[in-house]
Amino acid sequence: MNSFAELGIKPDPKKIIGHRKEMKDVIGIEIIIHHYNIAPSKYPGKGNGLRLDMQIELEKTKYLLRTGSTQLQYLIGQVPVNKFPITTTIEEDGESFKFT
Picture 1 (cartoon, rainbow, N blue to C red):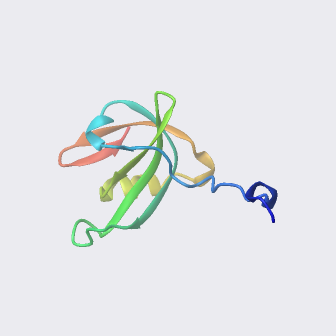
Picture 2: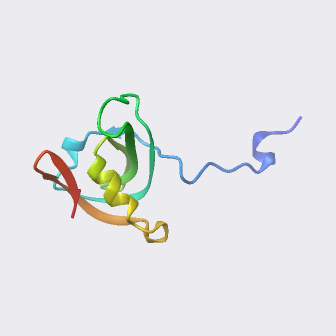
């Protein structure tokens, strides 16, 4: 019988790991974004029906940061994939958010 280790299967490096962080916990604090994913939200009637999941690092610990912010979805989509990881701060911008 084969062991899993012998199969040579490696974890998905794009999988987002860690406990979930709330947006309010990271506002105004510098974070590292390693990668992100935009997927359908479980609340399709809100915003554009999508959610942004980001693998962030804060104080050397990785977390999931999830938001329905269409503004953040648009902004992070402008970052070339080969530029990750990036450092940024998320700020409130009226009733929305922005990266600084």
